[in-house]
Length: 168
Image (cartoon, rainbow, N blue to C red; front, side, top):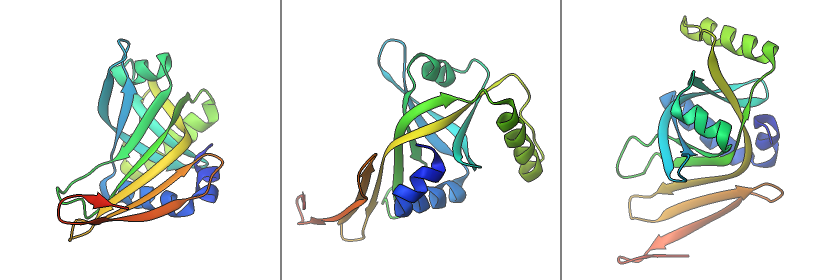
């Protein structure tokens, strides 16, 4: 599902991801290498029109990974070790953006907001979102967990830190 559909299905998780993306301007993407091992790479993600767009340099390894196997995970950047800012993960599939109009509007919006414009050729994907998760640690070690999967409802729980382990 695209970003607009995701925000309707899981509004709280969508807002949490947007907040983390707005705070850092970056995300991490996990892709699957040709040999089946994982690859983690930074990227600039952009919420534009109905999509979470993932722009990549031409022939970059992460883009080639997605062309071979579109399964991926987009993860918010974590910038403190205590986890108090929370982290959001969106799982799904990278869909190659071939619509020239969408590519052009996206490139123009990037230029309008940053003064820089991606030059062809470059890779542009939108994330077909299938699942999402949020984890935030409290000062006492408790863990707030929110999850969602396609076709389901947002779920939320707090796992309590007992001093030696987390319990539901």
